[in-house]
Amino acid sequence: MRRLYAVTATAIVIAVGLMTLVGLLTGFFGGLSSLALQIALVTTGLTLLIGVLNLLNVHIRRVLGRQRGALYSLVLLISFLLVIALWLLGEDDANRALVQDAQRSVEAALAALLVFALVYGAYRLMRQRVTWAAVLFTAALLIVLVGALPFEGLGILAGVRDWMLQVPASAGARGLLIGIALGVIVTAVRVIIGQDRAYRE
Amino acid sequence: MDPTVQTFSILIIVIAFATLAIGSQFVRRKRAAFPIRAISGYQALPGQIGLAIEKGQGLHVSLGSSGLGGPSSATALAANELLYQISLRSSVGGTAPAVTMSETTAIPMAYGTLQAALRKRGAAPRGAFDPAVQWYAGGARSLAFAGAITGVMANERSAFNVFAGGFGTELALPLLASQRARAASMATSDQLEGQAVAYAMADQALLGEEVYAAGAYLGDSAAALGGVIAQDLLRGVIIAFLILTVIVTVGDALSNGTISGLLGGLLGGGS
Image 1 (spheres, rainbow over the protein chains, first blue to last red):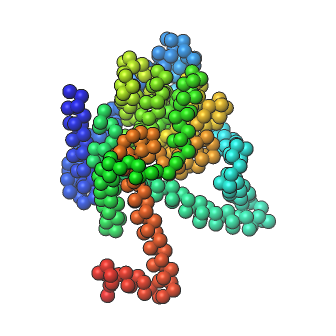
Image 2 (cartoon, rainbow over the protein chains, first blue to last red; image 1 turned 90 degrees about the horizontal axis):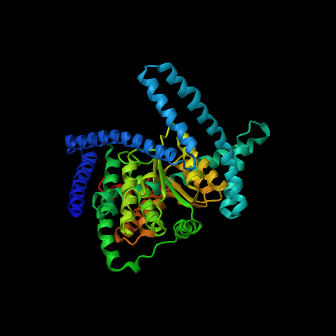
């Protein structure tokens, strides 16, 4: 029975995938491919419910089982219920205040921490692996940071910084993006022709 | 769609189709004839999983913001393959990795993958992996998600953290937490910022297309190896196009457009 399900699912995926691909590239099957995309969008929307159920399942279990981090899970559950209750009561101002005063403040604090994490990361890279790549990375980082300082005597460094950002950094970024794009194309084609592992299980 | 872009898109997709279909058949017959370059991240992965099992600590795989049904679908599938290979190995020790994601479409995918891996190893009891899959809302810049997974890493006492999927600079936060907990880490992203942070901060980083080759490096599937061959061939085609463009541009500058005129004539577009 499982085999039958797998074959049916594979046939549907291949048919819809090919139809959508041909539709996007040539304009044929326009109606059918947009219908497939709409079904995908509706399904994606429904998975939000799965997300909420998963969140509650994980944290209720943790609180009831008094597992590690149960206190944080309790705070999460209370916050969840509070937001739902405020929404049901029509307390939009209180809900907005919760988002603006609590969530945004915490996210701003995390964003500030990010700078220190990145600087520490660069420092750790040199401390652990002194390779040519690490030296080049650190030198480039220093030139870019120092070149951004608004001092008149650093005009040459600012020029070097601009060149580095426009030529080597841009070329490297494009190389990585081309690699990612090729990986995406090959993965997508593997799915469309039924070579993905998921079809075999 | 612009006709040139359309032509190139069709060309690349046709090459990918043909190489995958033919390449995987060749690989099935003569696997040793297609050696693949070593990637340190994949070489280190089985050892790190073994170490975590020996220590009696957990594993954590984060799929970030990649999910099905959007531009990150292929990345989600690639990260899912990595999750499958990790789960397959960790199930030897009777454990499933904790999986986190900020995209809800990745939840059923992760459940299915853990189920498939455990089933292949002899079926763990149903529900054994239930709390292992954890979704947290991403927020505008995923900072809330990054903060949440540092908590998951601490709760699960994970000895090996893998971040594969959609991550930006916020990846620095969980990687820093991993370092502070003296846990090993492997990271990759489909975003440039995330790749830069992964390179600088993770113990092992998978760059560019490397994450899309997890099945070929960690599994035994001929189809996955065929995918790597297709990637290499497409890369060769793109490099050839780039070199040709440089030659034509430089040649034109030196000869007042003779080369492009010659090429135009050869391709049937000349005067």
